[in-house]
Image (cartoon, rainbow, N blue to C red; front, top):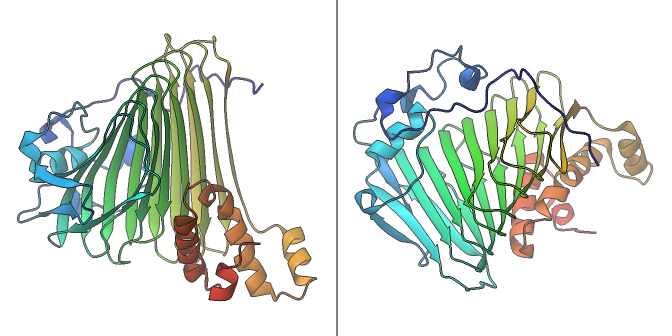
Length: 377
């Protein structure tokens, strides 16, 4: 059993978080706040005030509907100023309902697109009781986006959601992604971050009953000049629930910068929980910077297991030597090592075609030949 890591005086107090639909309830960030201290100067400034003439995000999938945001009765509340502004000014929401007891054998693909140069987003995915389905979301490629994804996982259901952020390299995206997990339900949320000039994703999880299980997975690949931040929050507020967080990132190029912050709060009433989080970063060149901050706060010692880990390093010379000894040139060997680094996460997507698609995108970014990308030995 992993020994619990108890933070008696954590660097951030995870408990009191402002949640509100009113943007004015959140002060405009100065950059000195813990939640914003890694953000480059001037980044996401366009989302700190309402954008006149902003559009909204729509979905091309027939399974989803686009409705007026005024018709929603969602209990989710924004957690920062940009998400509150987006929620207050978005006009339409994308809604996907998975009926109770329904089992989908094929992934449901939501291809999103913005209606303006800057678009607000609100997506709600609701898994009915005892349903089972996989949803793949592709974020807009040609629109700056600020908004939220809200997932409700009904009791006893098995829900998989994959969010692929691969937008134009000149654009910014800021997404809040929250999941409520029902009794004895299983949720896997995978974030794939590849594109955009600056990207900030805030996944979070809370539980609606005992026995809930959350798997939060992520892969991110940043190259020259890109900034990516993934800031997670797992709120264990029910007993006998589990969570597992695994995020892997690779960086190359001058001034590429990634941030991973994993916050796990185990409340006093959440006895018997099992939680672990890990972040691994691979530096591919000089000038790249990876910040990794795992936080674990326990309000009770009555846990089954709790822990966290973080590691950042360069290539394993033994792996490179092994490949080069078999006639593979150094550049291709490095690319294959990175591909293998991500394979553990990508292979957990329950659809072979989407596994191949995402590995192909990673390979294209790395410059791996097509015949090698398709070789899944």
